Length: 95
Image (cartoon, one colour):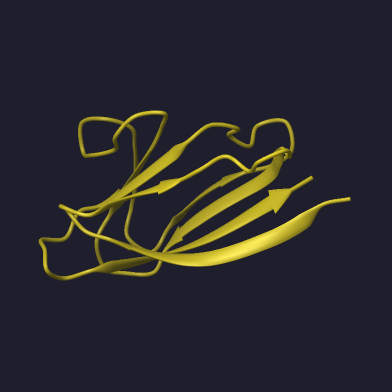
């Protein structure tokens, strides 16, 4: 049985957020959707920035379903200058 968890994180060019793997479970789904005017960066098991990871354009999303959902640490970082913040909406399916 899969359960969905949602959270909102805030990032910028200085502030990075790490989404830890679920304890005792597997991700069956992962969605990170930018809700700001700047791009954001996503990477796995190491830091994210413009030269390291995947660039997700402003207002777009990164989505993975069963079989391709990342099981490791997920790093998120924004592109806007601090102290401004970018909002990223996260949904994880866990089974």
